[in-house]
Length: 302
Image (tube, one colour):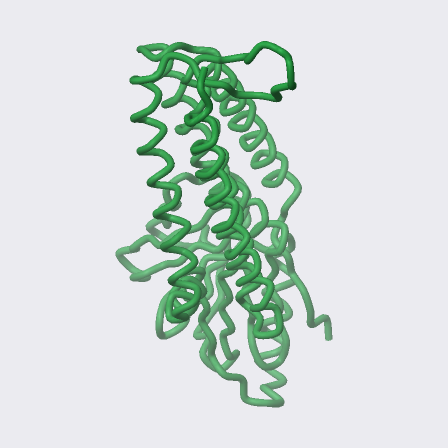
């Protein structure tokens, strides 16, 4: 009996997500470069908005690409397991009422918001099915998995093989009763938030970054030039426009966000949680060092 993995189609979705990430990264890089060259004024504000607006969604698409890369549907005689990034759903075979093609519906199921190939994710309401949760990659290969709780919309690379395997597994019956399991990405955040040390590190890093942004925004309009870059003994002090100070809060924020996400990744496993705290502590210290760097710069007479 062909039990095992029935992963979704991934190649097209990974290519599209890669292109989106690359385009956003290029736009963000150009925005940050122009930001360091522009004087305080409309050009500076426009460059800042473009840089932040293009950088903010990068982590979102990176997570979606990672989720697609790790996505899988595993079917055996006991359960159907759906894995999509940090989202995990284990459905006992006895809880599955039926599996059918989405094209068989009289009223088509609406795709979730932002229906990018490789990332059909989200919850929609259907007049006949009720709540339908999408964990799919290809709108042309959708299967509906109905349970008492909700309907799951998946898209295996080979829907026919999964349907045939489910029919045979149902005929043979379960060997070991399986437990239902639902894990959401927000569960990891909630679980980590319950740790006092994690809360302290998160909030300290957040306040350090907020303070650095506020401080830089106050310095830039009131100071024309600052000493930034390598300075050599006996040489003239080289100065740059104060607008380049925005590099420090932006770089601090980027590293903090990357560290926060990396820490959550390690926090999922008990044996790796020490690494999560090390990463979060490093992010806090990095933000503090950026704050001290700005302090040294603004206190250097020019």
